[in-house]
Image 1 (cartoon, rainbow, N blue to C red):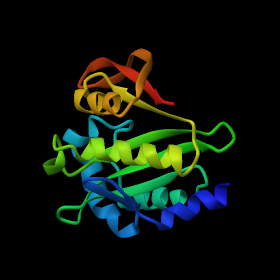
Image 2 (cartoon, rainbow, N blue to C red):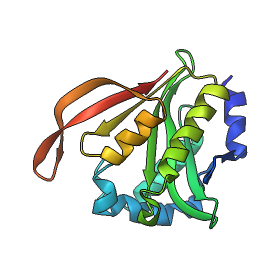
Image 3 (cartoon, rainbow, N blue to C red):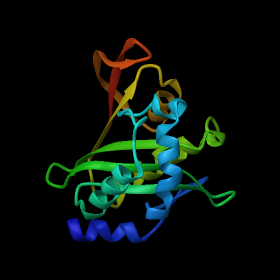
Image 4 (cartoon, one colour):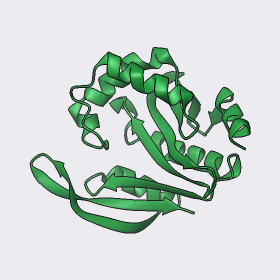
Length: 180
C-alpha cells in the first residue's frame, strides 16, 4: 500500500481553482519567505522567524525520504502561480489516519476561495485515493478564515486545547478538528 500511495506524488491533483503538485526544491525560496512573514507565520504551528535556507533544505530532504508525509505545492490555475503548500503528515497506514497542514503564503490569494479548494481537493485525495479514513488538524481560535473553510469542507470540532498557544503575548485556544 505504501509504495502504491507514493506513486500518486508523480501526478497532480486538480481542484476548481488550484493544482497540487509535488513540492520541488526550487519552491523553497518563496516558501521560506512566506514562513518568515509574521502575517503568515501567526497561523502556523511553529515560529519560523529564524528559519534558515539550510534548515529548510534539511526539512525538504527528510520529507523526500518520508513514507509518512506527502507535501504539495499549491498552484493557482488562473496564473499558473505558486501560492503555498499543503501536506498530509504523520500518515499512519495501519490506522488510516493523517494530519492536514496548509499555508497559502501568497497573501494576494487570501479570502478568494483558494484555501477552501485546497482543503476539499486534498481531503478527497486522502479519502478516495489513499483510502485514509480520518484526517485531523489543529487550528488556532483566531484563525476564523481557516475554521470556516474547514467546517465547510466537513471537518468537525472534536476538542479544544485551552490556552495552549502563545501568540502576541496572549494565550489562545487550539481547536482540534477532524474529517472522517
